[in-house]
Structure formats: C-alpha cells, structure tokens
Length: 171
Image 1 (cartoon, helix red, strand yellow):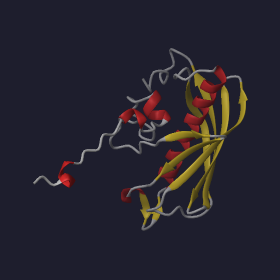
Image 2 (cartoon, rainbow, N blue to C red; image 1 turned 90 degrees about the vertical axis):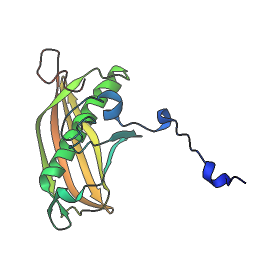
Image 3 (cartoon, rainbow, N blue to C red; image 1 turned 120 degrees about the horizontal axis):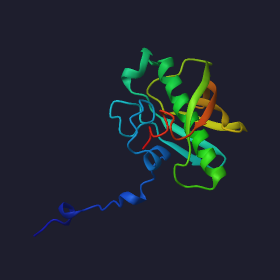
Image 4 (cartoon, one colour; image 1 turned 180 degrees about the vertical axis):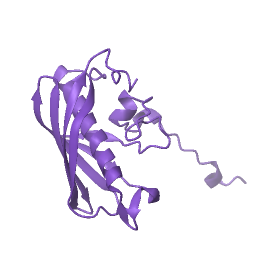
C-alpha cells in the first residue's frame, strides 16, 4: 500500500512571490548594496508600504564590526541604496510610470549612528522623500532594530539622463 505522505508536492507559483523594486526593475544590477545579480553583495529588497518605503534586512555574521554589532559601512550602504531607490520610485510615481523611467545618483548622504546596531536581528529602514526640486530629491531614513532607532540618514539624489555613465547601470 502506498503511503500518501510520500507523494506530497507543493506547487509554488513564482509570479505570486512578491518581488522587490530592485528585483522587478533592475534584476541585472551588480551594485554591491542593491544589485540582485551581485551574489556577494547585500542584495537589499525595498518595498512600498502605504506612505512608507521599507527595507527589512538581517545582516550576516561577516557584517559585524565587533561581536554582535554591525559595521557602520554596512549601515551606510543600506541607507545609500535604499534612499536612492526611494528617490527613483518617487520619480516614477510622479511620472505615473510602473517601469524604470529615471535613474538617480547619490550627490551626498550622511548617517548618524544613534546606538550600536545589533547583529542577528532584522533591521528595518523606512525612507521618506523630504523635498523635490527639479532633478534633485532629498530623502531621509530611519533604521530600527528591536523597535529602537539605531541610525538615521539623509541624502540628496540627482536624476541623470542618457549619456551619464550611471544611466544604464540597472539594466
């Protein structure tokens, strides 16, 4: 007699798995922070969530500066890439587009480390657009771990046009 427990198949429709903006719009990107195609990178995944733009990321052991605390450079990379994507998606939304219509580059950004960011927990970064002036988008973000703010950041991102070296970087 056949045991029915041995014949269980689970069909997962890959199209129903929610893809991040990076996976949908720039699947071939090799960026260290946000490139889905960079197998050694952070491969962040950013999502629109109502009025928020959310990144949830759990750092790996080798992202530590010292035991149980995440390296500030990793935190900076999370902020830079996530805020950049907030700028891009804001421009897309403003243009009424669901495809990648704009590219932005970082003009400047800064982070303020408020307390040690713990390892082995999920980090949440929420980014919001503060101001848009012509081709410049100012974004701020807050990182929390275990419900506590560990870092804040602010950046200025500039839309670039065809001909700029970074224009096709996400294609």
